[in-house]
Image 1 (tube, rainbow, N blue to C red):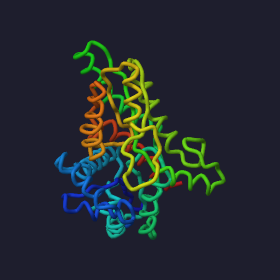
Image 2: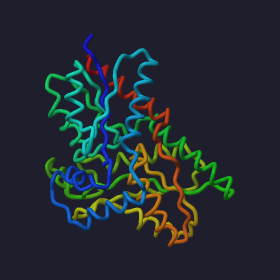
Image 3: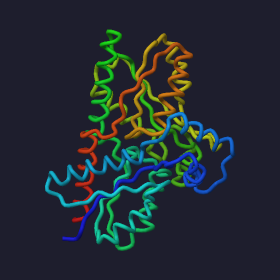
Image 4: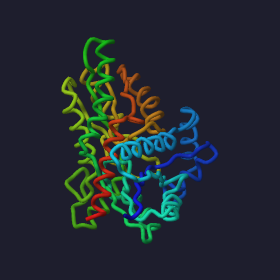
Length: 320
């Protein structure tokens, strides 16, 4: 049997503040960014100390490998990053050097936007050569993914009930994407340039569906909303509604406590530790809303089982 492996793909994060300019050039594919944007990102990293994305993703990979071994599968798990070390290209080359012939490739962004997840896929394909790959494009409706988020949400609701005597309403979020990229994709496939609409890119619908699946598993939620967070600073419109405008509307309904749960991120990083824990919390406080969040999935065993299941299905397809 050919040597098989699993490759997990993630965004990547710089190791030091000094590396942020180079990292940001990777994020925007070499396009110039205003200096004030670079300085703002540096400020955010300084406030959170560091982003643990890489080390958590490597830990997730070890958990997935342990799951596969426990089920009798001999498949090493590799981790590659699109925007920082270990770069996807370097990891794929190492896999080939290690003699890997077949690989299940999973992007750790469950909701598929062809303009973002597609970049990960192309980065793998560019170095794959004779390596046979099965790429999981999206897994927004994976039941174990919803289970993992629901576990974290139920734990947070338990804390809120103990403190306030009642469960809190929930604001689910996912990372925004530029309107222009979605519209360009829609136009390419003959769809109208509308957002949100029923166009070519499935991202918004998939993100909202993940939120629905999590909410179904936590029926004590009195009410929930959905918003897109972390709109970019590189110019042009990004899809919404934004978290800020949604919180403003929620405040108008008299809500005083809310749980904000990102359902597009699988671990702590700057969009959690700064955007949620600092910026959104401060914005909510000005509206006299107490904002808390469930713990991130990080090294959730349920998440590891979800990814291991995707890997097994991918490896099985390579045998067909």
